[in-house]
Length: 138
Length: 134
Image 1 (cartoon, chains in turn cyan, green):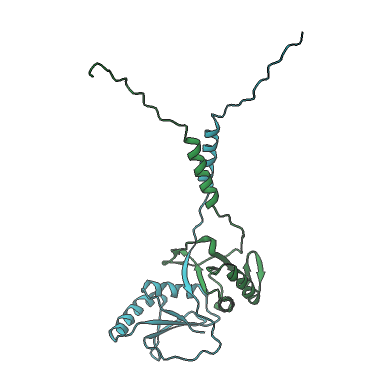
Image 2: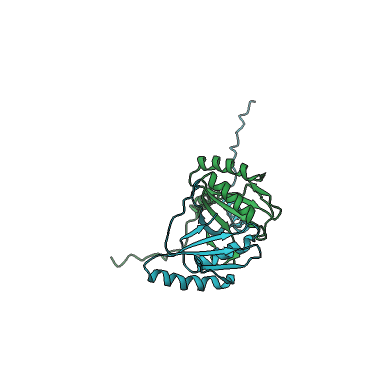
């Protein structure tokens, strides 16, 4: 009378698992956009309360004014140049300064009213001239 | 010796390890992906020839400055003084911090100078002027 009922063991087909994961992976690979950060690296000078003027040789000044005009040259010998000319001028000055046994330092001074775009372009030109020693005059 | 004939091998690759490989790839992408947490301000960054690729996304902090001289860090609008305190906190948490300055190309250098001074004050001196490649 009493019949023993057989229990069915639950099973499911896992063979499509790999396909599903693969599909997911491909979806994420295709839709992910890798945002790359690019820019000009710079290290700001240490904060100094009393800046004592030091006599350093090989300093080349670059001034940028409110009208976005650029003056470039050694102290007292600055001349007006266009932003595109900066690289060539700096390369010339670099050669001249290293011939004297010093190494070039570029000091940038910008007026508050000048545009950031021009400041970055000047930095770009300095990097083009392969000069790493840059100082920010404040 | 000679009598044994070789059975022609049936070219089959075992696909049993396939799910493991795919899983491993999935886990790799899951762990290496860094999601963008902040949206920032709409800025038009300048383009230069020397735009270097910046490595180490985890050490990067973004600072946005737009044309109306608003400064934003972590989606909060701040004054330069507040930038100092927030950057000081960030630097104490992570001494290898690099601040990426996303400044609009039409900004005046006055606000740029203020932000830079704030960063100097916080001793977060490693910066990147975010640019595009020309």
